[in-house]
Every structure is written in structure tokens, then in C-alpha cells.
Length: 241
Image 1 (spheres, rainbow, N blue to C red):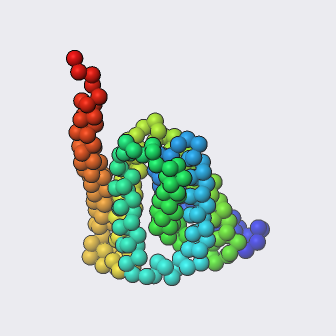
Image 2: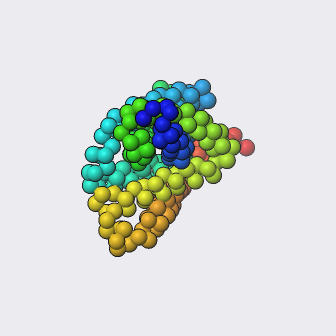
Image 3: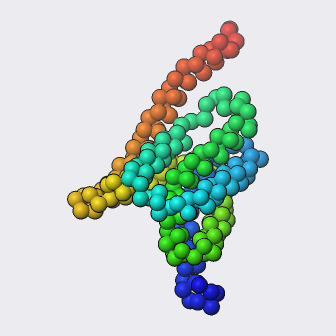
């Protein structure tokens, strides 16, 4: 398709829309993964995380159709997203400030790449479909997704710093996506569509609540274990009258 072909520009608009709609989820993941990094490391975390994610997308775009045809792949991916969502709700431990900065940065980058790889399957499939096998449009779709993800993640991160409740919402969003992936897997899609269409709504809701409730429960248990230790330290350091 040439630049003078209306279909070309229709495809371009479709790809941009896909990136805006589906790229928001990835921006949330990046913001969640980098929120604990020192201010001067956040941009590095975003840059390398997005860089690694884009490389993965380039690979995925060429194998997307084959990958999504593998039964149970989305279910495995959904399990990973549930784990990531629960982990992101855990409180920062008292010793976190002693961890080497590079280790923390690498951990954030790994989280971004793993989550983005899981969540990008639908994205690359949508881009490939809109591009109608035109490699130029496929590359355009990947390129245009970069600023959308980067700018979106920085905006979400600023909001999270000011409103911590958005961290819970973001983790719940990962659970929602995981629930949707379970019912749209090759192994479950046909049965769900013919026998239990209601699962398209129930599964995401249940998965989102599972992440929030489990994550909050584990966080409360961790804080309960830490508090007696803190109280004991305070008692030992309090000057006796």
C-alpha cells in the first residue's frame, strides 16, 4: 500500500488506536515496576525496560499467530500476571534502602520485560491484523508504541506518587487482564463462547479481586511480622528513667 492509498491511512489510524488502547496497560506495568526506584534511576528503568520490551515485540510480531495458536499459552501468561500483580502490592521492606541500586534497577527492568512480553501478545496480533501483512506498517506500529508507552508510564508514575490507591488499581488491572486471558485461550475460548459467555465478565472480576485481596492479605501479614520487631527495637533504644 502506498501513501496515496486510503487503506494505508485507515490502517495507520487503526494501529495508533490500538497502541493507545492497549499500550496503557503496559504503561501501568512500567510505572508499577519503577515506582520504588530512586528518582534518578526511574528514567533508566523506563528506558531499558521499554527497550527490552520493544525487542521482544519485534520477535513476537513475527511469531504472534503461531504463538497464540498454542493451547494454554495465555493461561500460563495469566498466572504470571497474577503473581506480578500480587508482588507489586507488597510493602517495601525496611532494608530495601540497603539493596544495591543496580540490583533494584535490574529487578524493575526484568519485571517490565516479563510483564510486557505476557501482555503484548494481543497487542502484536492486533497490529499485525491492522497492517494486513505490510511489514512497513508493522514496523510503524512498533515504533509509534514507544512514545505512547514511555510518556504514559511517566504520567502514571507521577499519579502513583501522589495517590497510592492507584497502585492497588493498577495491580487489580493486571488481575483483570489475566482473567480475560484465561477465557480467551485456545484451549478454553470455544467452550466459554458456547457454554459460559458470562465468564468473559466474571473471570476478569474474580481475578482482579483475587490479586487485590491476596496481595493486601500478604502485605498485612508481612507488616504484622515486622511491627513487633520495630517495637522491640524502640523499647531497647528508649532511655530508661
